[in-house]
Length: 228
Image (tube, rainbow, N blue to C red):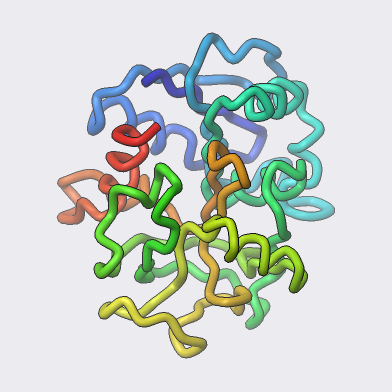
């Protein structure tokens, strides 16, 4: 699979993502600058973590106007794959490619720590190949990661199997006690109805290199590669 990793002013996880995809997962990867209008024939566009345009106004609110986003939206609407991690997830909600919004953490602080994720969707490529009885250890690093959507949207996400992951404890039990940011229903990631656009706040690229003594994040990417 050919991946394209977009860099915005303020991105800081783009090279991490390139490294994991290219060196660890052995995939073809190209870097895409936010002012470009050519996706270079990629199968999947990756919007990485960071602080695009300094997170001014709202996280992702300015990045959605970058020229390349017009092509990313068209790519997604034609069925092409898009993955947004952290700031990338925020950008996807700002563009409307994913439902909901990412609000300030309920403690109003930036949170950087390891959390556990419970796979929920059994039909989305990024979670389909995972053990749904297992909790996966993946880091978070965000100040605006509290997923929110109205009741009708939440019902739609549940009915269409669009919730990718929930925050949980090490035994896979999700509860308010282990919710790091106040996300509704402990939601850590969602997909669109067509299940070709994926967004999540945790950083699987930060738990994919064997040198870090964890492969949990790599398992998410391996599920993508197997089922896309």
